[in-house]
Length: 87
Image (cartoon, rainbow, N blue to C red):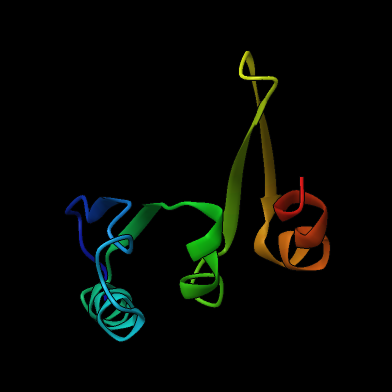
């Protein structure tokens, strides 16, 4: 499907108040509608979307003063996620 329309949506912590089945349904629906997604979610919910995304921008807060941004393909994040999620 090719279109000239802008098909982008941002989902900010949408999975926090939903069960995983509903969250996965939302992701499937967005894929069927050919929407490009920006998903903002706490790290404990990333498992819900990690098979449906291609890139991760992971933000880590250090010493309550500084934020560090890590950008990587999802494959790299999957390989290294214990480094990011156990800090």
